[in-house]
Length: 212
Image 1 (cartoon, rainbow, N blue to C red):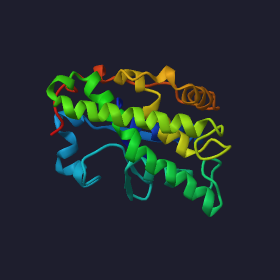
Image 2 (image 1 turned 90 degrees about the vertical axis):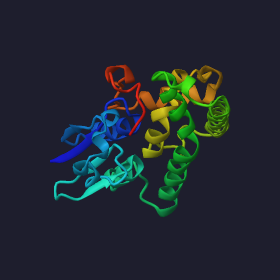
Image 3 (image 1 turned 30 degrees about the vertical axis):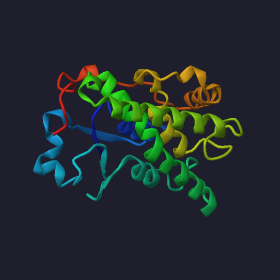
């Protein structure tokens, strides 16, 4: 059986749970208390050298880390990844966008929800907010032209970008102002087998601390 190394408040881990649910793949979970330092212990560093979640152990013992890499692996041969080379490249394009641009939303959300904003330099917070708004503007412009982020079909690119974008209000970002983004969020959430359950940082009493 697959083993998912997970941290419930992580939207990166949520992406993988979402695809596993879509595919109806059975798996077991091992929860890593990242703010208590479990990610930096030798046992987990042997799983993922960065100490981050998620990671996925396959039935044969091999391990993949990084959420988008895991999505790409699991989606092979399924409806969630195009079969042609160009379609796959388009999906990878938007998953790279997620890493490069939507990551600002993820960081700002994390700082906001765990009480870390006041510990960060004001210039850095302003930079993350500016980057987050830029990402939302780009998404809004693109989603005015098509139903899903990489084309006409729902793919792992949508799962990846959706994960933190739909939590933007938790970073005190004006998500409702981006009408094409919000319409797309509704289309994604209406997909069959969608995973609606998300977990706040407040379930982890250690999340107010800094990562080791």
